[in-house]
Length: 118
Image: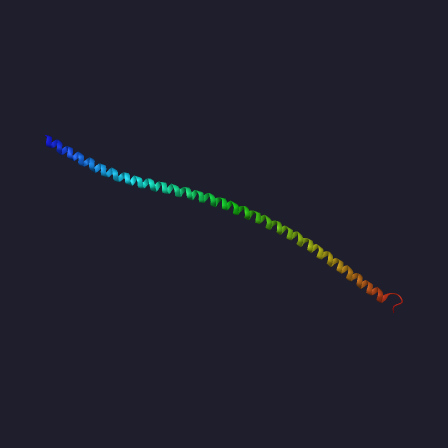
């Protein structure tokens, strides 16, 4: 009976030794997983920071684009106003030129046909 108990005890010791080795291996793997998790968490935080920075940069670019569009619209309006004024001034000049030409023609006719000029 003692031999059976010794055999049983040896089997238990062998099982315990195998369990201990397996447990040690699992602890190593667990440590590797924890290190990988920390590495991924750090990378995730880095990507979040990059995302925030990119979002800020996009907002700045959108603001600059909006300002530039407003400037271009204002410049377009100013150009259209100037073009309108120039068109009106050109029209006024054409009318005055025509009037002067008519006045000049009338004056020439009068000089040619005035009494005493035959």
